Every structure is written in C-alpha cells, then in structure tokens.
Length: 135
Ligand SMILES: [Zn+2]
Image (cartoon, rainbow, N blue to C red; front, top):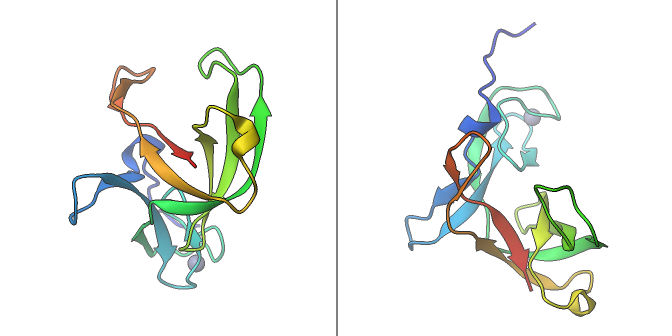
C-alpha cells in the first residue's frame, strides 16, 4: 500500500493561466509511466496506479462527443441546461455544460470552445472560476 498523500480536489488546479496570453485554459495531467491522460488532474494514474503524474495543458477547442438537455436541474444548477462530453485534441474527454441559446444547433462532432466565467463564490465561501464550452 502506498503512503502517497492525495490532495483535496480543491487543491488540484484544473484552470491555469496561459503564459502566451491572458486567458485561462484547462489543465489535465499525463502519466509519465504509461502515458495515460486524464482530466481533471489526479495524483494517481487510473490506468497503472503510478504516482508520476505531470501537468498537461489542454487546448481551448474540442469536439462535441455527445450531449443531453435537462429541463430541470438540481437547485444549485438551475435549468434548463445542456450536459456534454467534449473530446479534446490531447486525448481526454471532458464532462461539462454547454452554453448555447438553441440546443437544436448542437450536433455531435461539432467544434466547441472553452468559456470561463467571472469568479463566483462556492459553498465554502471561496472564489472560483467555472467553465463551460460553447459552439
Ligand atoms: Zn499510468
């Protein structure tokens, strides 16, 4: 049994500042042992259980893999909203919400782009950024 300490999710950053411009981007991680790529970042590889996870900055554009529309969400989500999986060029699939006025515009495999919100206060009273994708 490993004695590696797994940091809480709130301390595993998934949004990073891009040094090339002033817009944030998502960050996953890649296992240095087996090459498995995942999002959000994790401390232990889900494929080989290795502990050598390295940061993997992700593109801002991906392809809509699949989606579904919810007319009513939990009270903290509201509704209606679109939940989706996005395939990123780096080989990870991201679960997210889609920001679109007309869900009829959506088609599988269409390009979508990252949208980061203004800071919001979470249930712990901390300012956090949320993200969605949009066509
Ligand atoms: Zn691995």
